[in-house]
Amino acid sequence: MRRVTLLCVGRLSSPWIADGCRQYVERLKPLISLDVHELDASREKDAARQSKEESLHLLSAMAKHKGDTILFDELGTSMTSQEFAKFLEQLFDRGETAEFVIGGAYGVDDTVKKAAKKTIRLSDMTFPHELCRVVFFEQLYRALQIMKGSGYHH
Image 1 (tube, rainbow, N blue to C red):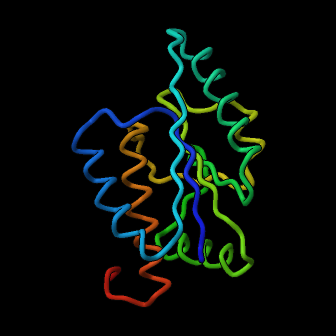
Image 2 (cartoon, rainbow, N blue to C red; image 1 turned 180 degrees about the vertical axis):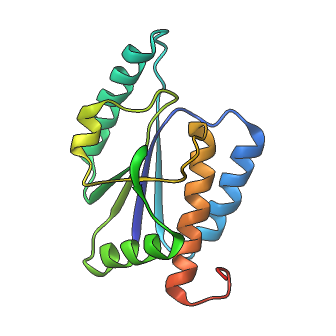
């Protein structure tokens, strides 16, 4: 079975985002094995220290998982939905687990960026990290539908 892991910083606090995530996770369940790991957000007030602390937690979690780590970052490579589907299909064809990382409110430091096999962005626009999660789930679902040849993506 196709396996996807999502490592993300923080818990969802917006009910409408949590509801959107639940809806897409339900759609994804029959299609893939999906593991979501929510890591504690830092309580540091300083943005740099917060990012550093959360990055250390992410690196620790990344070391425990197998597969290609793909980081979502505003400076990452841009992909269309079709390109993302092709990218995922190549990972799955090799039997790899796709491990995605969404950092916290202030992003991740260079250690996480260097540890990731690939860095992609969800948009040219900047989104709150919670919203990135629901956008990721939708794009994951869309990519799987593209791979399947359904009419979801038109």
